[in-house]
Length: 174
Image (cartoon, rainbow, N blue to C red):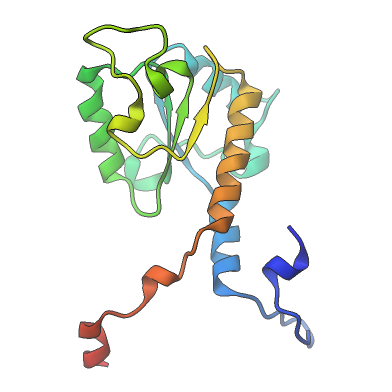
C-alpha cells in the first residue's frame, strides 16, 4: 500500500498526521481479526497447524482464536458441514458482531467435497455469506494464511464510516 492510499498530501506539523477515517479504521480492523474456528472435520487439524509455531498466524494479528461469537469477527468454517450442523453454524454467525467475515476452508466447506449425500450440505455459502474460499482437501496451512491475507486486502478496501451516517430521527434530536 502506498502512502497516497492512506494519507492526504498535506503538511505534517510536529507529530500530527492527517488521514482518512476509513483508512485508519480499516487498518485497525485488518490487523486485529479475531477468528472463530468452526472445526468440523479434518481441515480443523490444518487450521490448528496454522496457529502453531511453524506457520504462526499471529504474524498477521490473528492469533486470538475466540470460541465465543461475541468476541470474534471472522468465522473460519473448516470441514464438512452437515445439515444437522448447519443450524448451529448459522446461529453462531448470527451472534457475531458486525462487521463479520467468513472463510470457507477446504473442499467440503466450499462445495461439499467428495460427499454427495443427503446429509452433507453442498457448500456453506448456502447458509452464510462467504468472503474467501480456501481450496484443497485438506488445504495446507500456507493456503489458509494466503486466504487470510486476501481477507485483509478485502477489509482494507471496505468503506467503514459510510454506514455511520446519521438517520433523520437522530438529526432532528440534535
